[in-house]
Image (cartoon, rainbow, N blue to C red; front, side, top):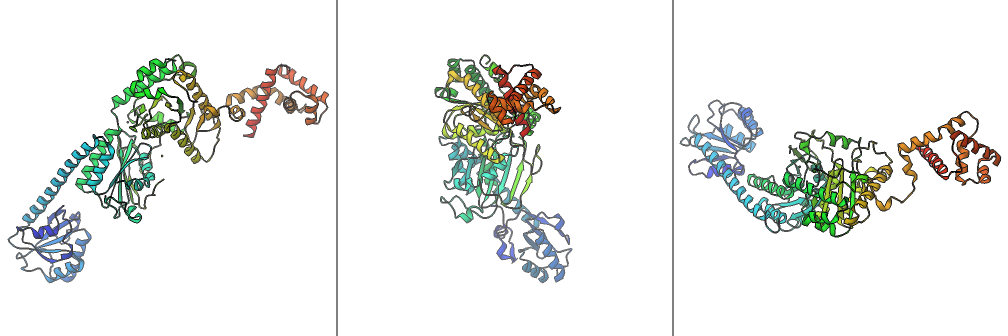
Length: 633
């Protein structure tokens, strides 16, 4: 504990006497300062014991002393030490009454006690308190380290940390889900902070948020009452060595952290970062290995792929898996941000990642405070919850009065745009980590390729993520071409193959590519290969190239009709829709069948193509449908 006025009064070598403010002697003293100024307030920081002889004061003037003491209290001075036997043998009554009125502790300092002795006593007590805090911090670090390397890992570490801070602690993974908490009841408290965790994850790391600040619960072994549980002070710390948040540590206490507790929290952050963040060289090696395994699978060499995968990915290749291809369409805000981001903000792409497309793949291998600083993943997840690719998932809403301070690279109060590919990778890997699944994640330029067990939690997490994003969009279909710009946060399309084995990996890749193309055209975030044949082919005609072909094919007919010399386009549509039945088509148009025959001959003459050719009829029908779709949109 830091020195207090009471500890100074009890100090045997100082012989201080209490003249006023007996009920406030437990107030901590930050320093002892001597000043004879009539107004020392400009030189005070708060928390000082002010020592005076009253040489320059009108100590017997009640009005003057009332103003003097009031200013001291307003500046945060915690006590006033008055030298007895220097100018006054006793404390002037005006000063004593003013101190009592304002509740300021007034201490009598005997003549034989020099002010420097009081300053030394305060300084020694502060140093001793700091030494105890550092010693306790090192001891906490040793205990937390032993817990972190033990069999229970992060769970044991959180239990020790909660004990050290006399509160609770929880760990969130990269997707924002609670993976461990101590004591047990803290998991429910932590779940109510997911909104704040999500806000922290959107900030460049390292970053922290403080939520709340009232009195709350300690680590008593039982969940506190609901009304006090939400009044505790919770500090959220991001985990990770780069700008991407790999996890979040939450620490809840009933009061602000002291020095020793702060040391313990910092040690926990460092240790948890080590468990969630791999070295850059290891990440690069795993990414290269994952890319090599994928190239071998796509080249039709499953035995070689299994041999290279070994224990790292071997289990993934022993059962049916799904191939996932995701991309950020070019032209969108997030795509531009990814292109403009500096290399330091991202982990390096794996060497020789599979950049080929389907044709080549088979042969190529409450008050809230936010502070942020400046501050990278692996290609797999086997229960560790580590990230996969460079970049960055309800709870109690924070209270009012938020203050935010951003570090380099982020504007005040404005989180950086989330990387959709990184968010998807984090979501799938975190889900896989919770169930012990293996997933293979390979960044491929502006794409992400993932192999995940069929029916596993990673695939389900991907589907849930897509449903959540589409729900936020507020629409289920928004056609757009490959180069069309999409709104911020809406810039991710995913294709998912049917279940396949290692021998059919190339076919699964082509299925994922086809599903990705359909997702892009239909404006959907996720399309599975089983859904490719579902619905109508007509939405596929919205492509600009198809529309250009249709316009070119029918332009001569539209120009003919524009001169008022007949309605060839409508006649052609009616005839094709009736499968060439003259009477039925003529009836639809309200003309004689001979008139319709004449118009169809004119169509053949103008186009220079025979309507007896089924390919010509098919192309004309698709051209009519494409132009109709363009007109309707």
